[in-house]
Structure formats: structure tokens, C-alpha cells
Image: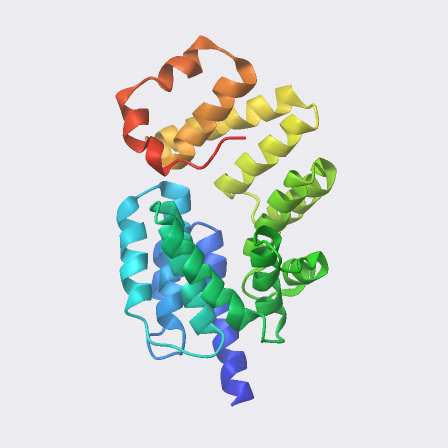
Amino acid sequence: MKLILLLASLSFAGVLEYAYKAEYDKALSEISEEEPGACVLKGIVFTTRFDDLGDTLDLGRALSILKNCKTNDFWEPMRRYKIGLINSIFGNTLRSIMDVRSAAQIFEKRTDKDSKAFYAIYAYYAPFAKFKQEDLKNGFEHSEMFSFVFGNSLIWILYDEKKYIEALDVANALLKRYPEHPTLLQTKAEMLFYLGKAEDAIAMFKESEQLYAKRAPNSVRYWCAVSHLAKMTGEALWKEKLKSNEYKAIKRWMPEIK
């Protein structure tokens, strides 16, 4: 049984590597429907693609797959956790809180490093829960499947604590593995801005805006670049774009620009 679980873990790690490298079709084609947790993995790939390209149909596909998914062990709390995140994006706040809490209650009882790291993410934002940053850091440094997820969460926790240098270090570590990852480049640009390197940050966001204008125009990530440029430069060019009907149509999907 342990050998089967190990082989499944390695297979899933390969799928997620493709997803983190933005090779989404390749990731989906590598998923074996016969493996436990395959449906959860498919939901993860669709939500990852949504975060990059902004197609809300991907979000709907992911939610439908995850709601109808039958699984157990680690993949059951993972299923609930992803449903909670999607409900949060859709604005279903109460439903999201309930889903993520039910996932966290299972993660808390498990001893594997991935479960501990996912619980640490929950604990940081949940009142009265005990946050252990070392569990999240350990997941980032050693997880076979979710290092990207844990690293990204660690960046924003360090950001909240105004530890911008440490946050930038984590972003750079992830970029060594995924040097072309477009959302990571936006994250790095934001950390540079808060470290007083405004020119570098602005240059990176301009590159990102041009990339997404070709790759996924009017996507969430395109408008994240425009919003940051409006904030960082104060230039009318970017502020005027935020008055457009295209931006108004997608604004409800936008993350908070801090």
C-alpha cells in the first residue's frame, strides 16, 4: 500500500509541475482517473489555470468536479479546502468559511507535512487557532506536490508582517524553479515596490501588462498589472484604463490590491 501511495504521489507531483509551469493541457492529460484523488487534482489544475488566465468557466468546472468528487484520506480535506477557496472567489463567504474550517479540522489531526502546512495557512487567518510558521516553511521547503502553494502563502504572510525582504527571498526561490511563472513575477514586483525599488517594480509590471495583453487580455492578471501600475506611477494612462467597461465587467473577480 505504501508503494502505491508513493507512486501516486510522484505521478501527482508531475501533474502539478506541469500546472505550475502553465502547461495546463499537459497537466490534465497526465491525470489518471483510476488513481485516488485524481478528481481533486483535476480541480486544482482548473483553479490554477483560472488564477493565471482568468477564465471563469475554469472556476465553474473546478467547483462542479470537486463537489461531485468521491475520495478519502488526504484528498478529502484537500477537496473541501479547494471548494472553500472557490466559494470565496465567488463571494460565498459563509459557505467558504464552513468548507475551509471542515477541511482544517481534518488536516489538524493528520501528521504528514502537507496536512500540517495546509493547517498552518488556515491557522494564520483563523481566530483562536495556533499558527505554526515552521510547519508552513517545512511544507514550502520539502513538499513534493505543494511547495508552490505553501511558498506563495508564506510570501503573503511575511508581507502582512512587513517582512518584505524575507518575502522576496521566498519569491526568488520559487522563481528559480519556475522562472517564467507570470503570477510569481507580479508577486516579486510587488515585494520590490515595498522595498523601495519602485523603478524595478514598475518595469516588471509593465512587462506583465504587455504579456497578458497578448496572452489573456481582460483577464484578472492583466487588470492586476494595470491596477498596480496605476497605484505605483499615478499616471493617467493606467487610471483611465480602470474606468473602462472592460475593467468594470471583471472587477468583482479582482483580488484586493493592497
